[in-house]
Amino acid sequence: AATPAAGVPASEPASPREKHLQKAKPPALAARKPGPVPDLGATDPNLKKFQQHTGGGGGVKTMLIVLIFVLIAAVLLVVLTLFVPAVRALLPIGLQQQVETLVGGPPAQAPAPAPVTTPAPAPVAAPAPVVAPTPVATPAPAPVTPETAAPAPAPAPATPAATPEAPSVQ
Image 1 (cartoon, rainbow, N blue to C red):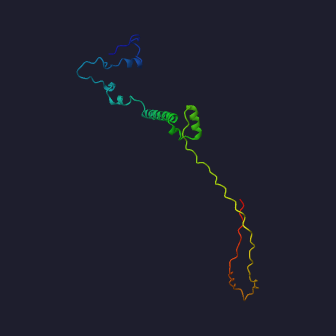
Image 2: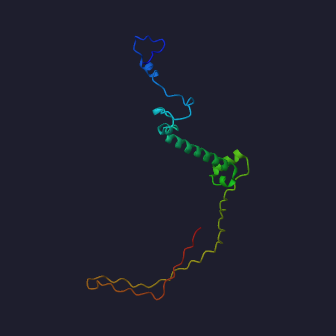
Image 3: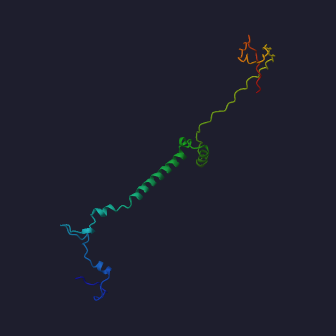
């Protein structure tokens, strides 16, 4: 026999909220007496289903850990770039100069480019005298007729003709 709550007349039916509040409740955990453990049913805080969901979403937690590690790595990279010249030397030249002006320290030792050397000009030699080529006797071509269609082998010159080299202009 449930007694109606104060302020609610007995003739009216109780609201769903009032019915819920009038249900029997298990004893408070702090008020438990030593001895046999009472059956708390689905409200027992030792049930596994209540312990599993206390930490929040697993994806959010993993993403937060990864974000923290990325931020730590970025801070370490900036600190190394500012204070370690060997790391600063790995940066492009423009960034090296910006970091050097920001830090105000000695410039990073960048690998020096190989010096550009121009070869010494070769001494100009006097131009070689122009020698007129010696004429080589060549036989006059014979008229081609159908009987002499086979070409005759050309006679080889006895001495090769000397060809003068043209002086190169630099």
